[in-house]
Image 1 (cartoon, rainbow, N blue to C red):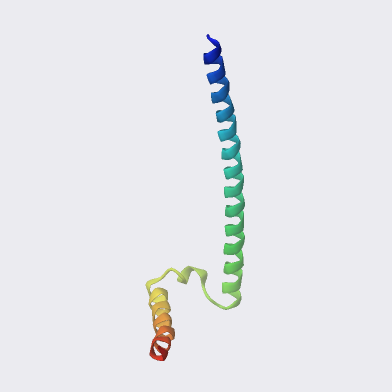
Image 2 (image 1 turned 135 degrees about the vertical axis):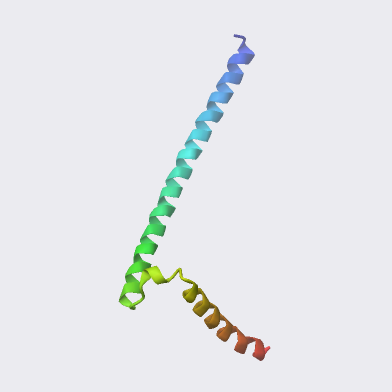
Length: 82
């Protein structure tokens, strides 16, 4: 193995170490984000129960239609003001 080969191998090892460190950093960030999302979901679930909303009914067609009606009712007056 020549000096150039050894130098290139060292460079590749440095790049590999850098990439592995970045991957670990990204894994840590992703774990933090997932933990925050789980916390938010738990809080949302608790609030929905306190408000008397069944959490399972949020993803129904009726809930989507009701949300659409609410959005339309709030945007119509805004459009009339313009």
